[in-house]
Length: 243
Image (cartoon, rainbow, N blue to C red; front, top):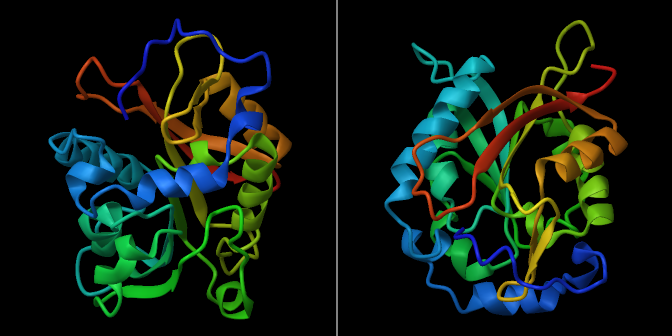
């Protein structure tokens, strides 16, 4: 989460071409399965983060429902880690949350938890909607602090797969939404981090990838309240262009 020296020399290669999924998984396999581990030594930002996320989805009409029925029938969290967001936010608004997370030790405690549906212990680049997923359809697909492990091409393909399993309304139009919440590079370029083999993209890069993946931004906001030594964090709500 924290921002390295952005004046460090970057390889002449395109930053996302340096991503190695095996290196990334080795890094995360050595991280403790707790909030401190998930947040890179900044566990105190979790409450601020969840509050900002809750406000954002409420503005999308997906906030906590009154009464017995929740606003979201089924959600998915991509790159869920230990399920910090699933447990701290998504299960408050969704009846069922499916999990995609390659590190099995992170999801062990989520198995059998009320409201947690299918758990896919694969990387986002490997995740494919199965027959049950296609039938389920998602009202909300949440992706946070994980997409930097995908190359631009992998991210494009992943977003297209997500768009293909968004829920539709009675009028046949897509009503589901994809949310991306990620660190923003302020160096004027995308930055490769060799520690966890990931890329921190600038806003322009995300917008280009969304456009190429056939998605439009329906809402975007910056997260407020984080310590100044951390990267800026931006939230995007996305739907297919034709929705």
